[in-house]
Amino acid sequence: MGNKRKHIETQVIEPAKKEESASERPKRTLFGWKDKTEEKETDPVPPHQGSFRNKEKVLVTCSRRINFRYRHLMLNLVSLLPHCKKDSKVESSSTKAATLNELVELKNCSSALFFECRKHKDLYLWMAKCPSGPSVKFLVNAVHTMEELKLTGNHLKGSRPLLTFSANFDKDVHWKLMKEMIIQIFGTPKDHRKAKPFYDHVFVFSIVDDHIWFRNYQTSVPHNETDKIARGGLDKMTLVEVGPRFCLNPIKIFGGSFGGPTLYENPFFVSPNQIRALQKKKKAGKFAKKVKAKTRRKMHEQSNPLEPDEFADMWKE
Amino acid sequence: MGVNNEELTLSDEELMTDDEMDDLDKEVSESGSELEDEDMKLPEPSKNAIFNRDGIADKLQDISWPENVGWIHKLVIDFDQEQEVDVNDDLTRELAFYTQALEGTRQAYAELESMGIPFLRPPDYYAEMVKSDTHMEKVKGRLLAEKRSIEEAEERRKARESKKLAKEVQLKKQKERNAQKKTAIETVKNWRKQRKQSGFAGGDKDGELDMPFEDGKVFERSNKKRPGVSPGDRSGGKGRQPWKGKNGPEKKKSKRESRDSKFGFGGRKGLKKQNTADSTDGFKRFNKGSATGNNKRKR
Image (tube, rainbow over all chains, first blue to last red; front, side):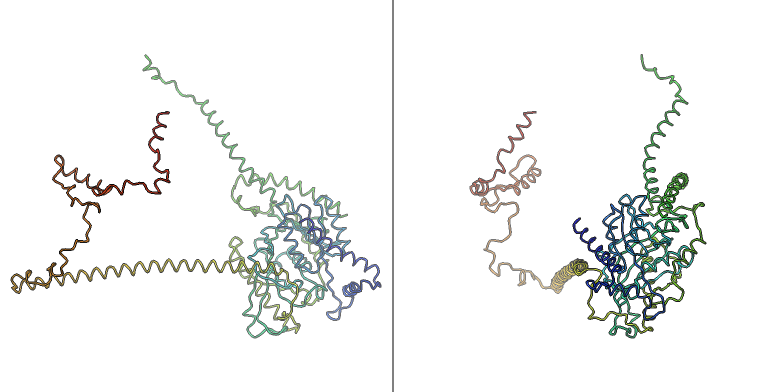
């Protein structure tokens, strides 16, 4: 198990290193294929759509001692985002912000997803725009990974997702910010070298009960041609869920990346630690109540003693 | 710079959570509900929560892409839900997500179609998928197993129903048969009556119907079992003549009868008292009474 993981990590790290070297020495012909992609990515004027080019890269990491379930969720997201770079685990300490910022810079990324697992139970997701941008901290719950057999769909690896948002993302400014960040992080850049040219899955981001719910569906349409849907095909379209599923509860928005001034705080948020503490306290209260009742009874008995029974020794003789 | 800020915020957070804890305690002890919910919410928004709208707007401006970015870069579809969705109702919630996805994809596909870009995967385009083939095999296996189990249940249900039906049919048939028998007897009775009424004197003697000796079976032994007589009994049932008992004849008789039917009476004992291979091999009846007796003695 451990070996396997290590293997994956090294695999992921390797191309990044190559890229670095490539950027330093672009003329070198040994990595010819690398050079080409590098050129493609740094191409200042794409053939169409004016001057804009999306060069988003996302760093995906997790904290140490993460749960297997949450790790699988992270790996699922890695497989969904062709423009992401996975990195080895980061210690979840007070200095993690600096480490993460450094890592992001090292990897040439512009945003990051950091899965922080605490107490083997609570998963926090940091979504950050990296050099200077804001970062959002979420509590993740209702996690279902792609491995679950109930989720029967499948789609191309690296095809660009369609992003659908519920209309209440435009209700308030902090939701707008989150929407923008989600668009940038979860949307695969057009003409990315790992992206496939077809559109066969759709992401759902929906705000229900002040939580952002995520779903991923595969679309299946009856069709013969690649650029046209047969008549009535849109009505016959069905969706099959691919997974993963999760639900994000925003906690805070910070001004900087992984820190900085707090711009927003969820006024309704209760941390899972507090919830657990309360539950424990409630359970502990049971015994305390019993003891209290006993002492009360004793006090009561002392304060109003029984009158001496006048017939007590009537039959003694 | 990030470090300092982070630490600052962290310490702030901790302080605040402590304060909040106390507040929360009071609140919960007052209300005491909603504790079971895993995903708990404060009943009312806390007052000291930070919400810097201008700062957020600024940040949004900083990070957002230029206005004139083509839709093809974003692939974003907004979907307006008409009514609020209840979170705890799983089915409606999932349905809402599904409809959002479906409507979104329809719009997106229409847009893509109008752009004239190939966007649907041709059937002969094979590439790596998100889920591996082995995993999809598993999924398929599970689906098949589910289907099979459903079919089996269906079959069982059908069998049960048909059994019930068969029982009913049989009951009906039995009834019919009984009715037929009854009517037959009735008709015979009627016929006899009529004969009597029509003045057929000595009809019984003359009638060819009830003469049992006519078919010559009188001399054969009747096949009927003699009641209460064991099959080997050759005493002709003399052993159990009821008038032999002198005191309490009725009671004794009934008791004797039941015992006889249980243990047998008369006939040759030899065959019954012989050992067989089973009885010699088995320890079943060996030393039964003495064991219990020993136990008793020990006590």
